[in-house]
Image: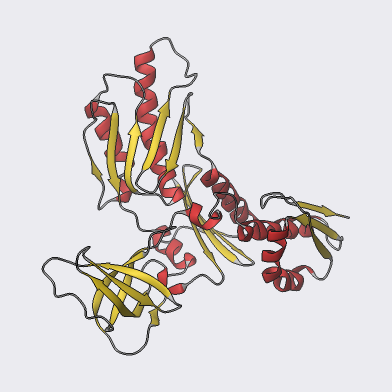
Length: 346
């Protein structure tokens, strides 16, 4: 297996990509203005807001007016309400779920950040272990491709068929479909589709930042349990420690748990309605203006987008003007959704 590393530094956000045999395996995104205290491995002084023994949890106030949750152990004395404690982020928050923390010990003073999480460049360097990290246009293209794949629900399998990955509040469901996979031996085709799906799904779950309870609805009947178990363990080995794989059920489903540490990428890219967020649209507009600006040096650029995207774009206008000069205009179009953009160079 061959992995490559990419770092895209753009106005408003930084994106890191790791590819596996030419396909995106991980996408890391940080955006300007995001709470630093809730990023994975960030250390802070937090204030205990409340202790709820009936659910075995303590709710904490982190710096930046954000909350986190600490799961109480049965054998420990719970922290006191109002106490200052030092904590480290163990899992990032997602949608309606708070970030969780590891309790380090007592602290003093008001909530404040003690140690920021490693930035994306540092994370890539740690994983790359001396391998080259590509920047520039190649990194921009790799990040755009990774982002596009994250947004897809149905993914084609090599040789035919597909898998659909759909996260819910409780679990991630993965449906394996044989589709038009060629071959007269349906049982053999189903076996190959299931084995291929496990490897692809493991990569895509890492790419999308998904985990927790995962259920595969395998295709066909009479599954080769030993082969599927071996394929699942190999596919999800990069996610260890913490992966647990059950036996195939009588309903033809395979259940496993995968450690969930990061915020799902979809939570960053989408809004509460499930559509592309205005911020994501604005950042895409910035990159498109930069792309056209490079293609037509000195040319005048005219862009159009939805009203919400234009409002979000204003946060990046000054930085883009410094980079391109005052040679672009952006206008709002009523009724345009957040992923509808238009840039023209003259």
